[in-house]
Image (cartoon, rainbow, N blue to C red; front, side, top):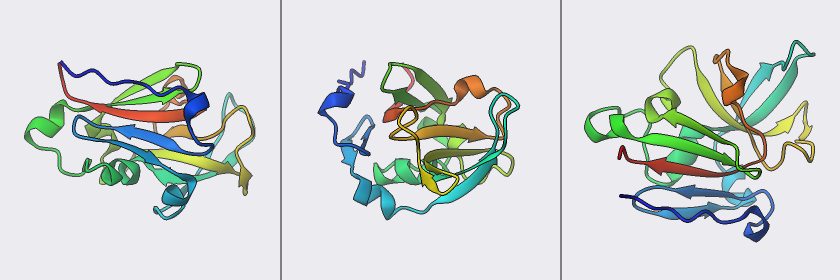
Length: 151
């Protein structure tokens, strides 16, 4: 059984992200994340005005920890990705949902909206599942990503 310790948000550097896998634990700083590829998505919440979010594709973050979302064979099919917010909210995705080759879905960790940093209630990152009609699986205040093997 795999047990992972969760670092409280207060102990984390601002705008950093914890990424834990069965093999390793990383803390990606704002500088590390700025070097990763970025993408944009135009989305609206609750029938509000559309906003342009900019952020890092989730698969690019996972690759920093040695997890490839585009190689879905064998044991990789049993991996799940748990995205954790500062308030304890969690979103669970299969690793296959993060596959960058899927044409109709994208998982994005946004750090900007409409050309500005995210507002305080969304920082440091907001998970957007572009193409997923259930916004309940989107999360704000993302502080950690845990990749877990099937129990």
